[in-house]
Length: 146
Image (tube, rainbow, N blue to C red; front, side, top):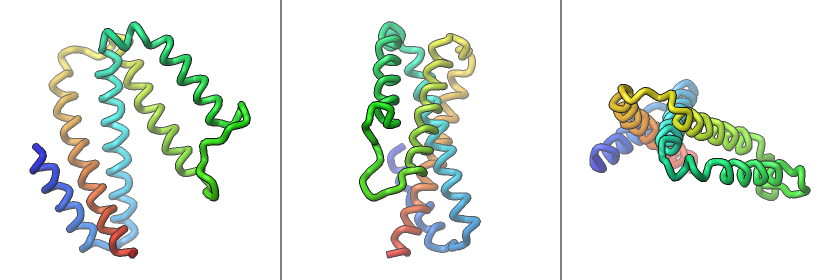
């Protein structure tokens, strides 16, 4: 599987070197984002199904909420790097946390049917390949910019 991931990364890099349009850039970034969010959701479903996490979910949730309040600056702190706007990063973090959190709650609730386990595994693989392809494209565009 590792060789296939490297081949998909190289293919994404090659496509990124050959295609320079704005539409291709937006498509590549969208593919990467969708792949990442689906992977995080699927990981959350898996984590939510774990018995250990079910026992510790209340304490984890409380500490995450406290960290979230601190990060938003409600306690005087700030998570943004010095000298940056941080709005895009903040939006990305919110999307990541929501995707992972929704997956955990979905897995924890027991609503995920066991008949869809194979389906979830296949889509995890597909979304991983999509994510790696998008990363390859972005690497090519970044290397062109330098």
